[in-house]
Length: 321
Length: 175
Image (tube, rainbow over all chains, first blue to last red; front, side, top):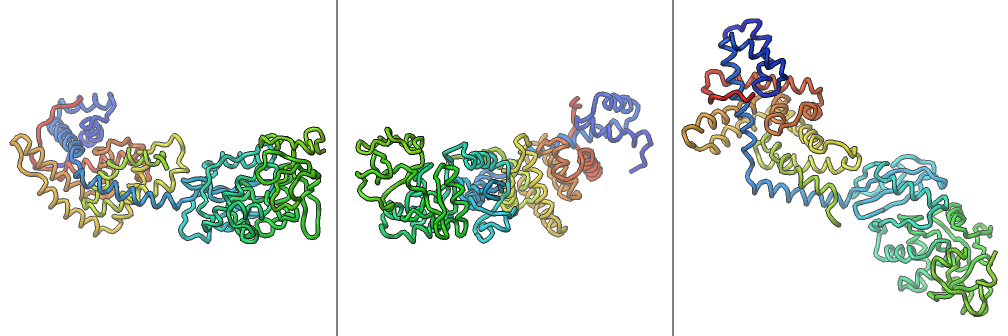
């Protein structure tokens, strides 16, 4: 190539921009002025235009449709696998300490007490090899807000879609599903749940399943207590949290030997699936053993369940205080 | 499980991202791997993406990043170049006379582009084939829009030099 005149070198960026349609009006004018009196640059402009047109013609060359479709279906398969393994989580500071909330495509899959810890390192998620975690506090913002409202007593229901795959077994899953049905402000016994899942007498297995409940609070295992009325246990060694949660729901507890006991005398009683509710002292109750009873803390909770007052003890005329 | 928003992203952008990576790699299996990795990465980050983000530019950035890692070894790039020469030669049968120069030049240009330094090659492809703006190209190449523009300019200059002495089709000024 012969060396270009300095004015040609100077105009080159504008010339290329003009040829490719990216120049502003002033640059186009400069190029026009220059090219009028400079034949080599005029030719250059034509060549750049040709190159640009050919380059844009590359848009028309598309890969074979079969290859695109094959790539797409291979991608869908890998994405489906990934989606089933990804958990999005956030850590929520709460009156019960830090709580990790994680959800999958299917629903909320983990609510975990972290205590003072603030990172994933303290979570059981760390031990799960077939799970991928993504932190996103914005994604779980709604869950966080609703959880905090619930813990403050301003919300009685967490209507979350649940993903129970971390339950561990069919039996544990069945226990969690039965526990979900225990209403707000009420308690029932491990024995009741055992019967509901078709395993009467399996209280210990039920208690174990609830001990590993991956969704405490939302699957309200804090509402499941011993047949004696004692709280018995919660998430390993977190009995205090069970008591706090029951307190939020208006269920009163009293200290008992190395434990707490619900104050039965302050709660209405429902036998089995009866449509009626009674005073705790009702003589019409088939048994006072908690194994087949649900205790309900307030008239509001009773009414929310649509129960009728017992015609014998008339709790509507003699409300508990 | 119904169609989530990410499925919409795949439906909308897979064909173009595939085309981009296929053009860069020229080998279907390599492109397949890079496309899958692009969308799997995107899915992992999808939840943290700002709601008003330019999803298309974002996907191109992920794909470009993966492509750059992929081509880190110069030998791979050379292999890709050799393949393109063969493939284009096969894919361009002689057409009508008036198209012949255009097609021939396009095949030549394809080869020249494949030999460009990687950043210039990506910038050129993103601009000319996929019509991304310089801001988006800058995001893809982790540089400023001005640098992105400079990469495209350099690419055009090199292409122009490589086509020296080669007959080019006559073009009317577009504006």
